Structure formats: C-alpha cells, structure tokens
Amino acid sequence: MRRLFIISLFILFAVTSINAQVSKEKFNTKEDSLSTLKNKVQDKNEQLRNDIDSLKKLRDSLKNKLQAQLHDLYILKYGKEEGGKVALGQIWTGMTEEMMRDSWGKPDSITVNKKPWGRYSQWYYGDIIYFFKNGKLFEWEDNNSGKEN
Image (cartoon, rainbow, N blue to C red; front, side):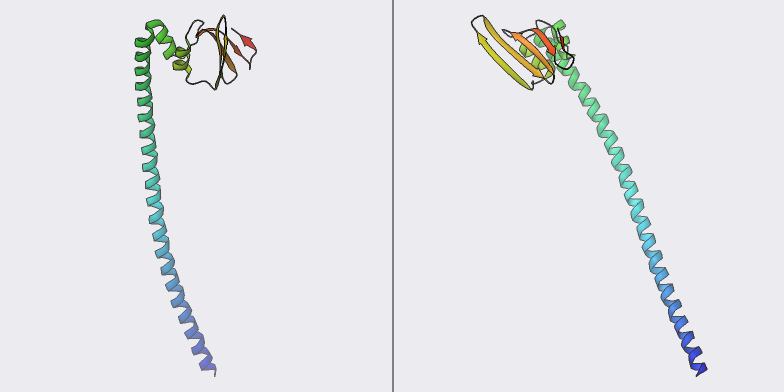
C-alpha cells in the first residue's frame, strides 16, 4: 500500500512536471510572439512619426509658396503698396471691401444699410466691427477693448 502511494506520488509529480514544462514552453512562445509584435508596432510608430514630420515640412513649404503667390497676386491686383498691405493682413482707412475680404477672408456677418446719402455696411470679425461707406473703410471698433479707430 505504501509502495502504491509512493508510485502514485511519483506519477503525480511526473505529470505535474510535464504540464509545467509544456506550460513554460507555451508561455515562452507567447512571450516571444508578443515581443515580436511589440517591436513591429514600435517600428510602425516610428515610421508614422517620420511620415508626420515629412508632411509637416511639406505643409510648411506649401504654405510659404502659397503666401508668396498670394503676395504676388495682390501686388498685381492692387499695386505694390496696397497689395503688400493686403498680403500682410493689414487694415487701413480707405481700403475697399474687396481688399478687406482678400486680407481677412469672409467676415462672420455683414449688415448693409442703403440711405439716400450712401451705402453703409458693417463687417463683423469676432469682436471687431469694420464700417464701410460706399465700399471704403472709414472706421472700426473693437468691442472687446472698447477702442475705436
């Protein structure tokens, strides 16, 4: 009986050892597989970072080329002095509504009043209101700072 018990213990130990060995091999295989996958993901992330950096450089280059082309276009359209101001986004009394749109883009909203003595419009860009009389800028107001020009 004691001998049977010892043999049973030996068999139980052997089976447990074999299972442990198989489990350890499966674990090592899985660990190697995950390490390989991790390395592939890290390589892909690095490639994506490089691609993003390249695209940012291309975007900046294209933006600079576009600004140069717009500058040249505004010089041709409005002349050297006023075209240069429009290209730089400057605002001045006497500029036209078309110059304003070219300089700052489409306003948030426009209000137009036609009177016997002229056409008045207010162009709203955020907190700033630009006042035009007969298509020419004559004044603006910054509602945020309360300043008028």
